[in-house]
Amino acid sequence: MKTKNAILLLITSIIWGTAFVAQAAGAKIMEPFTFNGIRCLLGGVALLPVIFFNSKFAPKTEEMKGYKKKDLLIGGTLCGLLLFSASSVQQLGMSDTTAGKAGFITAFYIVLIPIFGIFLRKKTTWKVWVAVMIAFIGLYFLCIKGDFTVSRGDIFVFASAIFFSCHVLVIDHFSPKVDGIKMACMQCFITGFLSLPIMLIFETPQIADMKQGWFSLLYAGVFSCSIAYTLQILGQKNVDPVKSSLIMSLESVFSVIGGVIILHETLTGRELLGCILMFSATILAQIPGKVREKKTEAEPCEQNL
Image 1 (cartoon, rainbow, N blue to C red):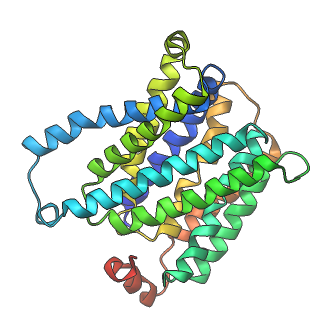
Image 2: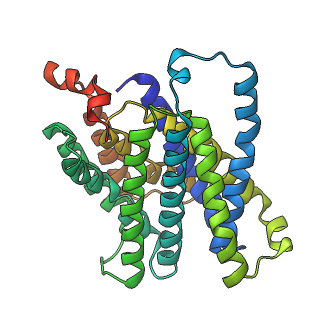
Image 3: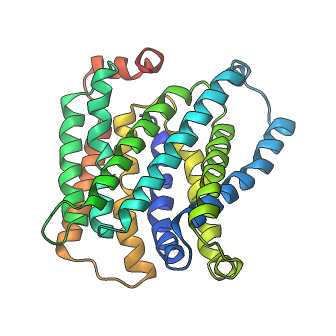
């Protein structure tokens, strides 16, 4: 993995982790589809000036000239549908489970992605499999603080992990073929517009609540949706999706760190061990392997879907 890609994905995980504080605050004020719908629409709107500037002033590279509108339309639509499905069932599950369990189960995508990759003929080295297992154990120490019992909410959250896994794999396939900013913008608008009917039918959105939670909406919309999802697409370009998911799963670590810094929460020894294991797993996955593995990683076109 190139250093540039790793940095973009690391920034993505930091933004998502710190955005958890904003999302938790917003959830106390607004209903789930109201919050998700508005923040995603804000994220899409925030990307429009960037797209306009790039189309007018940014030089066109040979790679960009090869982009096809059909790939953008299909990729953006699939990403939007998967993101909407993942965030919706996750939010439904959150009402019947703890935040720690939800974070742990959602991050199960780090295990699901290499499993799905087997059926897509994507090779994963033993070293990366070991890193995935270490990260998964780290997530357990980080997120689970009591007995682990399965509730209905946990099943919903596990369904969201499946959708998030598919989302990562779709981005892996389409990111080399499209303008990443445009695809991020499309998925934000699709997710937002799909949330609106459910918001209007089943919820009671209030302007006063939106004004009260304006900072949470703004941060979760502009930073988490527009910036982080764009960086995810750019960072995943021509990169093994398993390694990408390991870096992005660090959002659980940064959410805990954000809680310590912003909310003045206490970091327990168990949580500290979880953080160390996850960071160690991420570093292990990035260590270059044999020459044959490097060659395989340098041929992303044959490895994509």
